[in-house]
Amino acid sequence: MRGRLIFPFLAELHRLDTKALALEDPDGAGPLAGGFDPDFKEPVLVDTNDDGIGERIRKEHAPVRIPCQVEPDAFEALQEYASGNSPRSRIRLVFHFADLEKLGLVDAGSGDAMVRVGDRLGAIFDLGGALVQAVRTPPGLFVTEAKPMGFGLFMPRPRRNLLLVTFDDRETAAPRGVSA
Image (cartoon, rainbow, N blue to C red; front, side, top):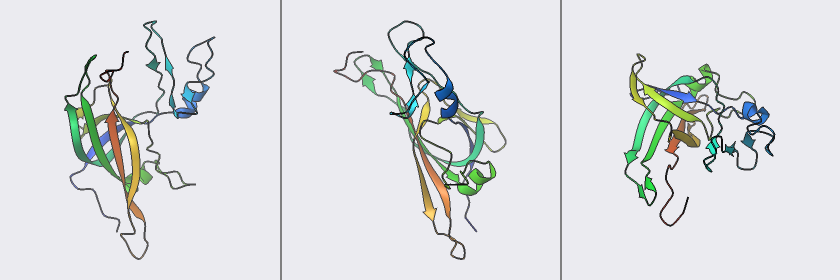
């Protein structure tokens, strides 16, 4: 007995493929050797259209739909900046480790969930597959924290059962006092 999700939906998750990014040369003959920054643990920025602003290069695994419980915090709340509006969004999803295990999203060696910082939420569907909420990208909603919780609920064989994942947007405008 590991419990279950309450009022489940399906989250369409686009997991960041860091291995494919590391092998890609995003700027051709330029100085970059790969598309993943090992220091900052995120995709590099490359100015692909010569506008002086670097675009994020992403490689993603095929999308996967995972049963989840939805805990909205803020959705497109108004946040004004000197350079424009950047609506703020934060959604928390609760995944059950039993579902992650069935989908092959738990590392057998370490026990870590393979839902990681930088993964992107594409949409939320009902259990019948009908779209409930699409997530516009940009700005998108990206994993900023994946926290295992609910340890030891079944005393004969204690295990963890839940993964709380926080998705936040990325700012699309510069904060006041910062020039672009």
